[in-house]
Amino acid sequence: MKAHIGTDDVLGLIHSLETTTVNAHDVTATEQLLHGEEKHVWGDFGYTGAEKREELKDKEVEWHIAMKPSRLKTLPGKEELKAAEKIKAQIRAKVEHPFRYIKCIFSYCKVRYRGLEKNTQRLCLLTGFTNLLIGKKYLPA
Image (cartoon, rainbow, N blue to C red; front, side):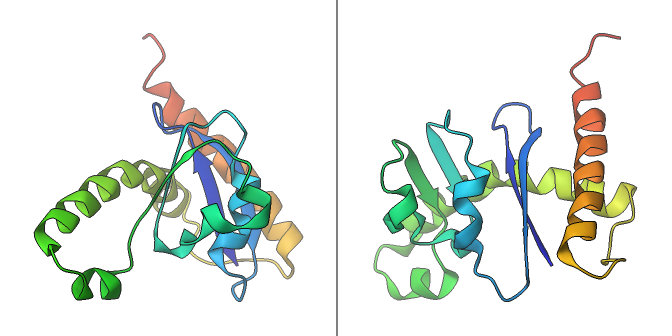
């Protein structure tokens, strides 16, 4: 099972969750992760080609998808491209922080139930708890 999340770029709160089977490509979950108010979309190289997909062609967003490392090695001007990819990675790191809460704090390291539906429900609960912990930082004391 793969968990795909959409997060707010300012606070880092999870606004959408999509789970897929392991053999499904990451880019197939892109449409469910977008809420329609985005101006920029940041993704890792698993989402390469998202802007070309039929269901996403009408989206008025700037796509910032990471380049595959193997492709980066073959292109000229590597230093400038590496600097650009580093900036993309720093922004995308905001998505990885909720996964740290889910895995380390709530000890979600493997699926417990048979079937995608029950495991998705468990992840929905954990993402809600994660949003509470992340949002706690922004509340007045």
